[in-house]
Length: 552
Image (cartoon, rainbow, N blue to C red; front, side, top):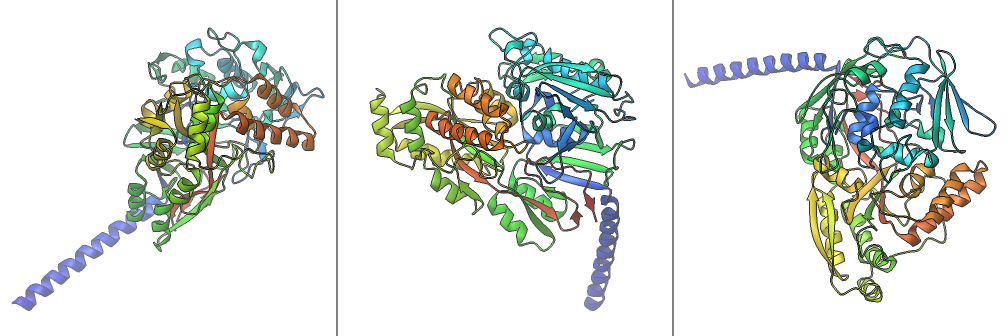
């Protein structure tokens, strides 16, 4: 009887295993048409012109396209909605012939009028949406508005001057001055072309801006109806649960190889790895070095690395006293034990940064860069020379969630930096915040004194690092140095490569003399995938297309 019971249990177990295997096989077959992404969190909004974070832009880059783009896996600029480009002899008029027969996913035809409608929208953006915390990329690339907000930059400060249609399928973008980085800037996911019909129908620019600086749309364009021309379109988005993209069957180019993409917000990297191990997701973005080691040890998983095309830094807002004093900023630089942080928390994938530009970028300075080794005694001396009474109390903002490639464990970075600053004459007031819950908007809106932040390049040009951050006054840094602004403007207009490189090298040195921030790391960025995922093309700018992915 006992033997019979065991046999019965074994048979039942075998039946259960067989049923489970059959179900798993069915799920795998079904999953071949679905790519499940484990993201660091939810997007902020699905309108690239209103966001600056990678989590949002990785999704909008699947829905919208610009005139040009980065060739997948490279920094090379190639045609997208335009078929080519040509600059006038004086560099002020750029002509783009456009693709014919392209339609937005709401059926609206793509043409020159649609391109100009988007540029006009950005150019005439309502004053309440012109702040750096909302329109960061327009501000840093183009620098002004047709009707500026009080105290904001107007047409006289703007790189952009106008858009003209030349028939249905040719458009001219007119600049106020030469810019050698302009073409690369157009590859930014923030300048994806949206359906003019949808922008109007779904009230893209209507809403309110809260005290935290975040835009809360009353229309549904940026939450439910983002209409572009890309290989995918939005099916649904439930914040905190999942965002679902489906293939655009009428896409003008090669159709996406995977029918459905599901983006699941999993803010904890360990939880993302666990979901990868169990097969709940196919891809885990921005792993910590420790979690990357776990993935490597699993025969069903693999790790791929993005190149070190980023910088992690401690930002300094000079509008908040006493950070307007250079010696106080120098004291911060000497008071940050950057080498220990990079050595302890980056698993051998971090390089100690002594300047803002990563070594991959033209303009990286090989000599003359001021060095700030950890030196608490030197920091205290500088504070006293600045007339400050020790300890100097400072608020220090840091994100509690959303690990980034340049910052895999934000709280640990903060704790280590706060401890070293505490030994260097400072008293740190911790200000933790959630990335999507006002941290980004607060930092970019100028509310933070010290803050952990970073940057991943969007295209392979020093202007995308230096001009974007230090080419004009911004709320984020409260930094105003006309001499540096002029140097960076000159560098961006220089067409001779050798002269341009030398100008950017000088600017790199100057930034480290003026210290609007203290850089500490350039890092390669690990991501995890299941072994059956192929066609994922790693991008230096971290905006990989999902349309090339195959789930085997």
